[in-house]
Image 1 (tube, rainbow, N blue to C red):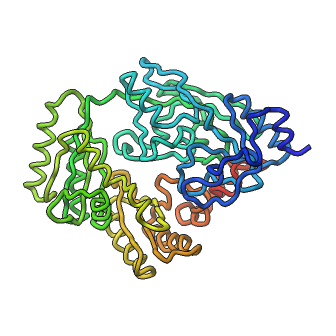
Image 2: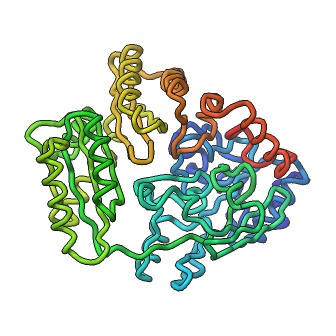
Image 3: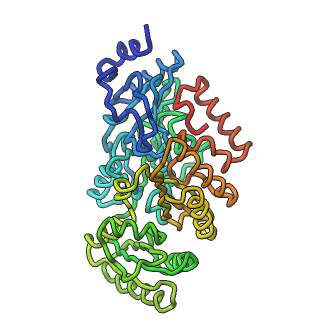
Length: 454
């Protein structure tokens, strides 16, 4: 019997094959996947995942886990020889504990659904990404997603207290801890967070919840240089106790997206634009402090202009420029790169990187934006005459400069397949060898997401 027959016999109609498999299982959002998997399993219980992995491990059958498929590194691409475990039906909020400040959630739950459930309970789930409507909690965990609230609340791993994971051999390891302090040996959850499905399948998580802000104040500020951006960030960190977002856009990025959204917010497009956001901790009395702070920063010459959102609609209009969704429709073969560098080096890196890319691709669109406060910079690249080699050439140019700046080739998108060949630009031989040892220990037959990360 084939492994597919074994799976069907053991699990029944949750195993899809042939024309039952939808096209969405071909690739993540990088659109680099080419083939459909040989089977797709759609479990609703951890025990079904455990049985599937047990059978696949016995047969040496490779397995790829898929969630919302919003990743950009090829990490969820399966290929024709793989079996996919899709978590699209493994959804639901199992518990919200107001006393512990936690939420226990299944891995297939969309992030936005979990956010709304927390808000309905008067609490905040601080993990927040632009793909919140489609991405799933399991994918957020397996890639250690960052997003726009890292400045205040940390990356995904900083908001996880406990996990349930199914290992390659089908063993279910349940450690749904609710305590912030739990110093009992190895922190096993951290092996799986950020491992991109190569060490085990995350099925449940206990997430930290925070007090729900009374509201948010949002301002869009114009600045004349990257040095001014850093000076502004420093001031914000010292004077805004509820600072929750600091998003910088270089001139070309801001211009493209403001024009695409048909917004004219400043008389002249500034060299840099920054969205700064402050959580209201009590009531609107903090608005006066926020406005006074921006006025003082304007008088000091750090910012050259500032617009304060007067409504939620106006705030969303600022964010629509930062999120840049129009680029996906308007720029052909758009490549999104995601790197980290020391904050003080980001301005020089962007200038050097932009020059190098424009020298190699004179007709290309190249623009920069990023969270900055957490060292994260994104690069938007589009070459009208792009071919199959273009992405690899672009990666080589960018990551070589990242290596020289001793930065990270991936701030929050993971490694997957697209960054795997450049991992040694940011990790030492000793680190890579240790990763291989961990992989060998937890997945000795190499069935979990093979060819990804390592």
